[in-house]
Length: 410
Image (cartoon, one colour):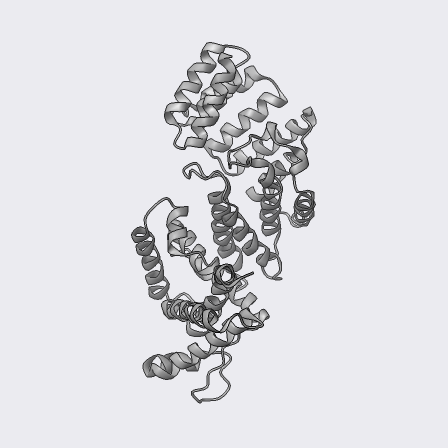
């Protein structure tokens, strides 16, 4: 990999590690300092490597430079030094020589602890995701703005408010106590779930699938499974859910990036290793007595990795949707359930249940009813597809609805 491609790659993989360790050492109130040191490290890499060529071990070079920059910063800023040096766990003697631990074990622990800091309940949900993308995933401001379909100024303000909250609440980079871990973990899982969905289920971006967001959510969730305190059933269930969905990435879009619906996907393109991974973690999640929404959604996703259109499959999916609605009601879940109902029981029953929902402002509602009516009442089906087209927000959704309409007309 040449320098032009290597530096962006390393920024994505190593920036977050450096920031996490420095935040753990300095405290979250100095998160900007940690980010500045990490950014300066990559700036120096771009300048130095452009002249001298790539070092033998680029990642190790970055860690060495980051350590030196952190130490120099502590020496320069006497006020900061007085506040920070006594708090650094790895500081062995009361001298100016502070040690910054960038070992693999400390990087892993720091990133895990950063998850709990970023996902603190005092921080607004949308700010948690933005902050997670920045400090846990190494995304640039432009990338985050693109993910949220907004401008850099809005993202910078959102991040600023989140960082101010980290300071005012004195949020530390540490694992919560054993008593707190369960409640705090729920917040972490919700953020990772939303981050994954931002890449997989987005209804606003013109890009159908943003794999980079999904893979980052998977990476962070896997970190939780590797820690004894957080390797809990609901974590395993969420990772299983992500794995099942990720297994169909290659079949979900064509060579031009257009969405391919489930029924039309080429099953040979499904990643069998990811399906097996999902099955393993779903099995791991069966321990304990707590049933989370991640368990139920993972179960639904599992049945979707079996392409055969059997009654057993749809009856199982229907029962899982029934449980999911009892656990956490959502209009979208209720709408999805009606499709499973049409496959497991009858189209007439599904139409009756769907129309009760009265989600008339949703293009998904009208698209589903168009599908359900297409073999029973073409006029009603076309009417619903027409309503769906007017309500659809993205060109991809509009394209799919137009295709369904054309099939009915032709």
